Amino acid sequence: MKPLFSIITVTFNASSTLSPTLKSVGEQSFTDFEHLIIDGASSDNTVDIAQASAVPEKTKIFSEPDFGLYDAMNKGIDKATGEYLIFLNAGDTFHSADSLQKISDTIKANDCPGIVYGQTAIVDSNRNIIADRHLIAPEKLEYKSFKQGMVVCHQAFVVLARIAPMYDMRYRFSSDYDWCIKCLQHSRHNVYVGDTTIDFLYEGLTSKNRKKSLIERFKIMSKYYGFIPTFVNHIRFIPRFISRRREENKLLQH
Image (cartoon, rainbow, N blue to C red; front, top):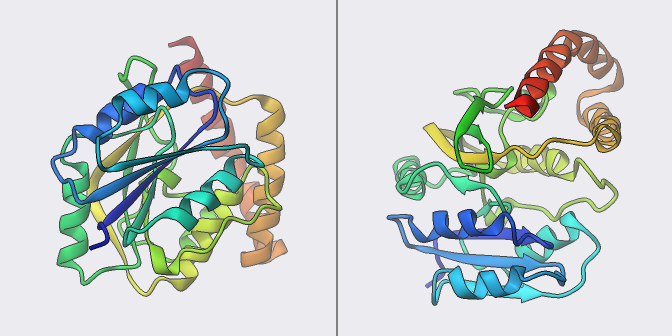
């Protein structure tokens, strides 16, 4: 029988961040899952760490060159056999040992929804919670919700595998945003877990990648929600952007 969850972890030279992720998966009280580690032919000991610390009999490790993050995620989708997909990046973890159980309970209580989602906490390398995510996941999620940005963290966005598309490789930095919107287009029912499910490792962003990511995101928003509404929304986003930059500066000083 196929597992309920396919947990997909993409890695490349992730030896410094992978162990907490593996530990978190191994500590889950709910065990009906497979864990796919999609490695991009790391030159450090990432694969050795995965082989030594991953959950026996539930983990499959694939290591080969790829064309970047979203190509690796597509490989994960292609290899996944679970009913639901969870993308858990190296360094990110489940919030608690019963996070998968809570997600499973939500699925069973709501007739197999297309998307199940929760809140996200931001943690440092010592796994200390240092902030809430700048956007709070809404209790009601629908297609138009992402008009306001990525209101649900990608790692906390659990999707029914049969409605999940491949990631659009035309986007180098924001294909996850495009992917989530496509999933929402095909989901008949989205359910909020009502709790924090994921701890997201804060590593900071380079200003160069931030700019490219924002440009891509604007194009994606315009494609789905229209250029003029997106332009108007971005004017409204300016105070939020300034506030976020201040928060990031505080995190960097933490």
